[in-house]
Length: 376
Image (cartoon, rainbow, N blue to C red; front, top):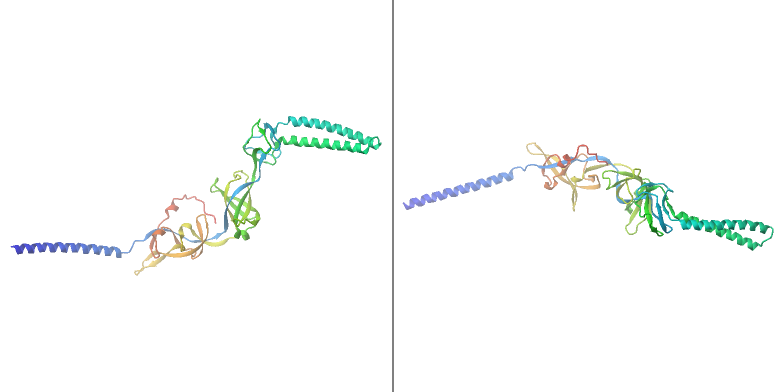
């Protein structure tokens, strides 16, 4: 009886062990099947490389300056009697701006003019008398000297009186006034700034290596933060004949028209110097380039056939030499042919020989249909 129970228990244990062994074997079999099954393709976005006419440009940054600009100051001290302009208005050359109190100068001028009149009469009388030798030559010279001194004094007072009335030295836009009626102004006090905004300069620097590529008259494209997306065109007007020793940069000045007065002196400007001639270049989206310490590379999409003759897409990692970057595009100088398809998103999941499936780029789908084309 005891032997029978032991046999039954052994049989039960053997069945349990067999069941566990069968379950474990089945699990291992499923895992093997999973690893041996072909991996599904990785979803990526891709775009073909294209060959386009490409005009090289030299990027730089600079600042805008007015063709004519000055801080209006007082030459002669005095009290402001009248302010003849409004802040921010356009003024013409010679237009009065400030009238200072000039009563003392006017009175002095009247006195001096009377003295000049007397000196002129005495000089004419002396000339008549010296011709008849009724007075000495030295007495006549004294009368001539007094006439010259009186004339100079009148001219001096007239010049001082003119300085009491400040006029615009050129046509332009005047800034916010810094003085009021009744203020006593000493010599050198700033009244306001006057800027000619019809034409502007933009000063910028380029590396000395760019000197052979520059010439007066070359076109310049300028953009400012105040008007994003808007481009203003100008021309190189002057190239400094000396390289800055501290920076080894060359100063360049361009001139541009500003008929609407939108641009203001002092604005920060991003600009590009357009170099002459266009060349055919292969370009790809900037997102297609993978940058590493070992070099720049792209994933090129190609076709592969299996043993059954079915085609599938695979990628090949290819190192390339890149050139200029502009407007989200990169010039590829070596390593890529026109028309080859390159991966533009999803590169982090890829390796050389990975199978891929091309799907639309979601970032491109989000852009409006009427977005402007990129200019090369």
